[in-house]
Length: 107
Image (cartoon, rainbow, N blue to C red; front, side, top):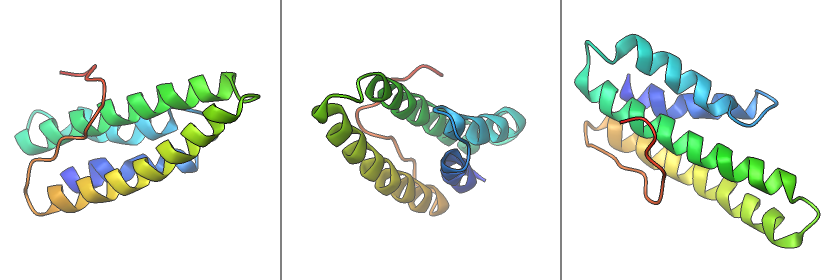
């Protein structure tokens, strides 16, 4: 279930607004957090990571006419895909994974 929490972030690519990748992990975390401590921890990590990526995406969208935000958004998108896959693999193996450089809103 913890792996699914991380992989549900890819549903955000199907939802046409920033923050769409938060909804899937948030729902799974809310349902399973009390009965599964590992899902509770990894769900919070996935939610915090996706909130951070969404904030970066919104800032880049508002400054789309500049070149640097477009390069940053591309780099963040690629990094997000790679980090989500790494987190899913680690959590599937039962290892605790913490995303680097994220804001931790949900504690």
